[in-house]
Amino acid sequence: MALAITDATFEEVVLKSDKPVVVDFWAAWCGPCRMVGPVIDEISTEYDGKAVVGKVDVDANQEFAAKYGVRNIPTVLVFQNGEVVGRQVGVAPKKTYTDAIDALL
Image 1 (cartoon, rainbow, N blue to C red):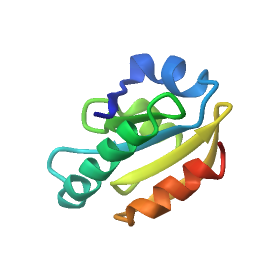
Image 2: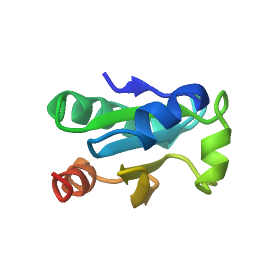
Image 3: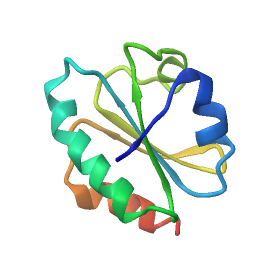
Image 4: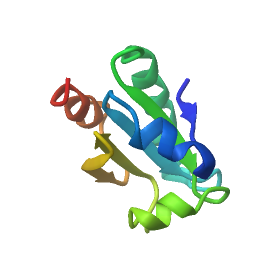
């Protein structure tokens, strides 16, 4: 299961991580988000110990969504060393996300 990331934990979990981080910005009312969510959960299990995989509910946590210009959801950002190195807006195949992680490992 992907980690629930909040505005309060974002800096510690995402920006200070020594591993690649995948963050799914989503909302409960968003249909496409419900398609991406299970894929993100699968990736979280498969990359356990190799990458950090989490989700930010944009309705409850708007600070970092705004900071990184997330205007459409789902948006999946890939971070390395606290910097955004990848961005996928909308639904994409699982391979799109795993390729982004693999490139950083």
